[in-house]
Every structure is written in structure tokens, then in C-alpha cells.
Amino acid sequence: MSRPSTNMLFDLAFGIVVMGTVGALIGTFLGAASIPVTSGVGVLLGAVVGFLGGRRFLASILVGTVLGGLLAWMIAGLEKVSFGAGAGAAMGGFLGVQISMLLDVRAARKAAQVEESEDAGAAHSAVTKS
Image (cartoon, rainbow, N blue to C red):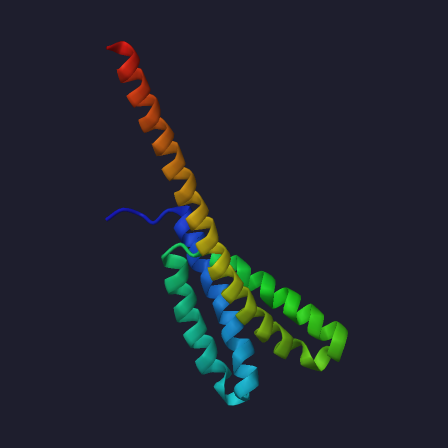
């Protein structure tokens, strides 16, 4: 059995930390008794997302968490940071999925254009050789 790569281990740890933190923040909404359950679910989901290579998705959640927490702190004070961070994480995840989809569509469009230009160049060279 081969050893996992360093990138995969980093993605796995990154997913566990980010989603475990988000789970803990969600647990603060539901009450202190539910923090271990929501954190555990977050850790499991983070491990799966990290294993599947969702680094862009996790980074968008991390940025959303930090920005949401900072915004809540500036507007409502220190006691509302966890609410802002949880909401920011949700928005960051949503925007991360949308941005990732748009980047994938853009990459597919560029690949199709390159393939089309290569096909046109091959057809042109076949015509000029005969």
C-alpha cells in the first residue's frame, strides 16, 4: 500500500480544522451541550472534503468565517462574534461553490477553444500539404 502524499495529508488536516471550527460555531447557536456533536460532525465532514481535495472550498469557508467574525465584532460587539463567524462560514461556503463552478466552466471553455484551434490548424496544414 502506498503512502498518502503530503498534499493529501495537508488537505485532510485543513478540512478537519476548518469544518471542526465551523461545527463548534454552529454548536454555540444550538447550546453548549451540542458543541461536541456539531464539532464531531464538522470534523467528519472536513475529513471527507479534505480527502476529496476541496482546498478552494475550505479556503472560502475559512475566509468567510474570519470576515464574518470581524464584521460582527465591529458592528455588534465581542459577544456576537460566533454568530457572525458562523454566518460568514455559510456564506463563504456558498460563494466558494459558486466561484469554483465558474472557474471550472471557464477552464472547460478555454480547453475547448484550444482544442478547436488545434483542430483548425491541423485541417489547415492538411489542406496546404496536398
